[in-house]
Length: 110
Length: 161
Image (cartoon, rainbow over the protein chains, first blue to last red):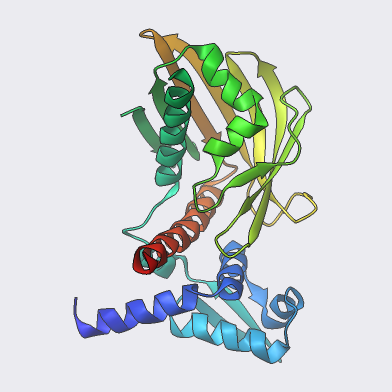
């Protein structure tokens, strides 16, 4: 892996390593939100939420646009996708469920 | 390997998973009929599920939440429409807020789980259908974040060991 990729991975994992940032990301992946709407969801200052949004933006996970005095954030699905390419998807969730059902059935049989 | 087939049909906006289990249909049905057993299979180990309401009957509601490694909570609901014990049941599956009010920003899927006797065991078919390709994509993308988070939790556990 070249150094640029490593830096990018650092930024991604740092961005995702915080509960509030993951929550912000979930919300903006579901649809565009203004920063002030986002700030309303958390028990922290507007500036603190803005800072979290900036970390996600630097990692390339969300993009911001300005309209008048408001800033809006939306999630960049492509980046989340590429970041997670070697990680699980829906299919993995199901493979997990099925192997747990299998384990449970076999366990109770014994 | 119990998983027989996984099919993503982006045209029909549906996901189908087929799996074979070495147990009678009634035994597999029991997992869904018993909230304590269902909890053991529904959420991944990093996000265990807790069912607070469990009404496996037409018009019934199953409310559950999953608890993440940092105590973060994700709520969801099933609204059961049809039940034909022990062959199949049909339900809407969606995301909810902490009071289990449906979150309408996120897609709700229609699901049919069916179980049939097959080769001395059970063939289970799980079908989830979304209202649009975008909705399906959105759920896949959400799943990816959970996956990334869970994978990171595993890395942490590995490093701490």
